[in-house]
Every structure is written in structure tokens, then in C-alpha cells.
Image 1 (cartoon, rainbow, N blue to C red):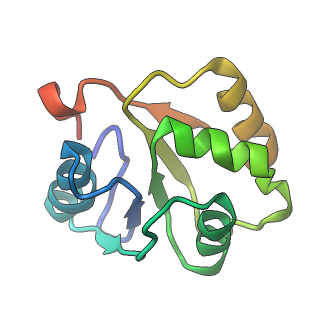
Image 2 (cartoon, one colour):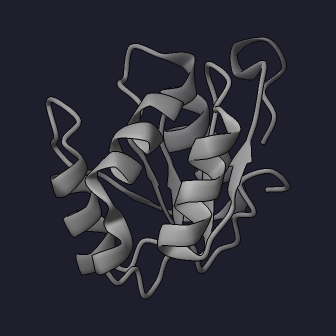
Length: 124
């Protein structure tokens, strides 16, 4: 609840594939422990335009995706989308470079909160 900032009124969308530990922690355990709703989207391959449209269409409040996906989203330029419900963004995996943090902030007005050691330490 501290890193993901989840509450019972939140809707969490984690794009992690089910083969990764991040899926278990980000899509099952953390939201359920915090009493949050889990948003599920069948997206066999990450497409930034589909993710941006989904974030603008549904009342997702917390978004977790891989650093590579954040890179793809800022390259797509999400500044024309309105994420009315989104309030907290998190990432984990490989390190996210400072340029992507800055571009996301410019395009959305939100920070990305980066975690590490998800498999080893399980930061919730």
C-alpha cells in the first residue's frame, strides 16, 4: 500500500505478463491486501495506443507497467489523452532513465514511482 498507494477505492491496472512475479504482486496480492479492485485487459502484446486509450476510457486510478512500456507510451506522446481517474503510476524491472520520468511528467502531469527488487523483496 505504500509504494502502490492503494486504498479500497482504487482500481489497479498492472500490465505485467502472468509469467512474472510482478503479476502476482501487482495484480493479485497487493490489491487484494489493500481491498482494491483489479482491472484486467486482454492485451496479448503491449501497444501504447491501446494502453493510452484504456487509461483514458476506464476509471483506473493506479497504473503499473514495465519501464519499456513507459518508454513506448512517451514516444507515442500521451499528452493528447485525458486520464481523468489516474493518480498514481508505478514501474519495476530494469531502471527507467531520467528522460522518461521527465517526459511522462510533462505529458501527464504525474510522477512515476519506481520500485526495485520485486521478486526478492516484494515492496507493496
